[in-house]
Length: 339
Image 1 (tube, one colour):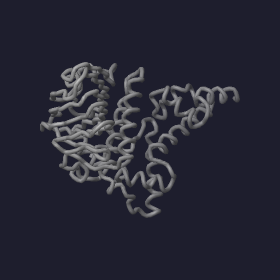
Image 2 (cartoon, rainbow, N blue to C red):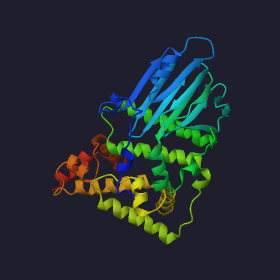
Image 3 (cartoon, rainbow, N blue to C red):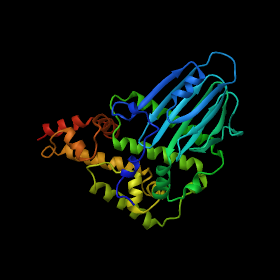
Image 4 (cartoon, one colour):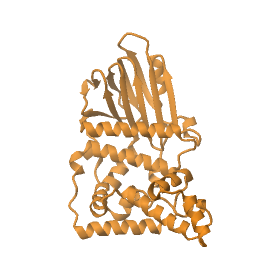
């Protein structure tokens, strides 16, 4: 097993257009006034759209390209029959929000409490009603298998069934769709490229949500002794402080501590009443604040942020102010004034 998160960011990116692989582009948006044009706008697919209901077609598409994952939202005005095929050794997860009628994948109804799953390299048929909104996730197969084994501690077959339609909790499904919508909106609003860690974090977040959605039985809290729970939290904190100059994510902690993501979440929730990601961020923010308060050591906000693994200064300032009620620069100015 690897000792860092490099495996999340490696691998083929053939589904991503050349312009989106560059530093300047993370999110691509497009509109279409023809069903064929809509089909062509979605990258990494072989597909044909046939319009089934009458009227002038309108479609919109927003795609977020990560290293080995594409997340997208598709809205179409008219009923469509689609023949689709995603690239080989990938998996497509289709999450519809049906306003009028229900969708079908290979003749299976996709209701309010279901999502669609299809492997790459195999053509399938998708029927979508008019006024349809669809959220999609295409994941590289190697990434999905490695994440399942190293973070979830599950075999892929335990979570991704062969069936085209998977029953899920309706409320959690809507929550996932809203999270994807925010992710796409935030990505489109950014005025700078996503860092490697940010892309890794987004991929891990999406995969965690998918695993929770597709395998609710596995989400039951594991049986872990109280002393062991405290030890896991303590070891996690020590590891983060030992590597304070870079952000440590949940997947890396799972590997380092030899626990699954659900075990890690359960331990943090039981011992601290908060998620691992929130606690790890708080540790680093508190460390940065102590350095800013030490006027003899702090050189600048930028230097302190970098020393604690915060490379996106505006995000650091936002998180800092949310936790402490003041900007980092204000903390440093007060420390300098009190010398």
